[in-house]
Image 1: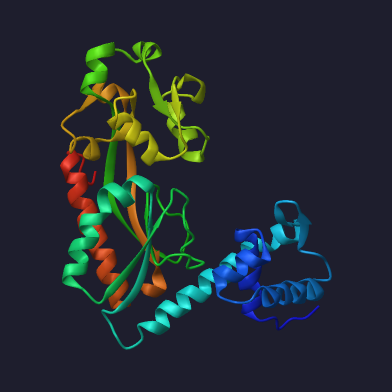
Image 2 (image 1 turned 90 degrees about the vertical axis):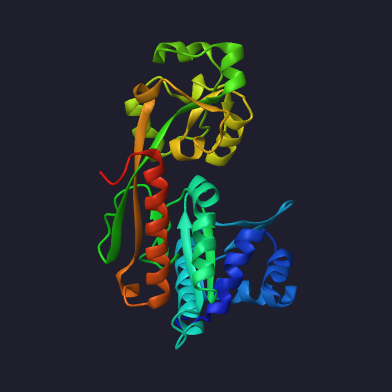
Length: 302
């Protein structure tokens, strides 16, 4: 097996996995289709087994390709981190800082924080990864992450910001038409907005609210942003962050503290970035902005 394979081959491999065809991968990478084909052939020859099979819908990854995907993605993340570091070498407050945060925090909370940061540091370029998946800081998928759980990995710098309060809310006209529940049991008679796919976070939340399960929901989505949009549109009752709800005068809190939980909020980054002025500036700006947001809910860092 060849041990000195070029990164370009793995880059093409990932593009074919994403695009599902050699032509799509070639367009995404700005190379020719024959070049993409040669890259895949070189990898298959090196590994001694096929990585893709042809189908009517395109190229399908084999088990070998699926097994290699995570390693290739880790290589891509490391290469991107290297490029970010090299591009800003010698320019302390210029360059790219890559951040990840959940859907709601990314869209509803961080934009004014990032705007203020960019006014203070216009040389910074912010890449925001909007995902509820926990990005891997150790593999440098991102430089800084806003997380809703205590980091457990070593080699991370982590600052606890506080607890974001989450409660049940509905639009005023929905409650006017269908009544306001006064007990948890009353929710059974209402249109509920909730999740479609079960995640580890949802399993933990279900322990606090056993009646909050997929079969009970009239409207289901795996996207927190879609659920929030449905609540804002008056579709029914659902969970959303109290700080976000307070900004909409038509959203009404339902069942108060009897239907609430908190999201422990942390800003984290790899300890190797502790002395990086760009990352430190972004880290501090996120911590300050999130602290101000949490104070709006009255929770504070407790």
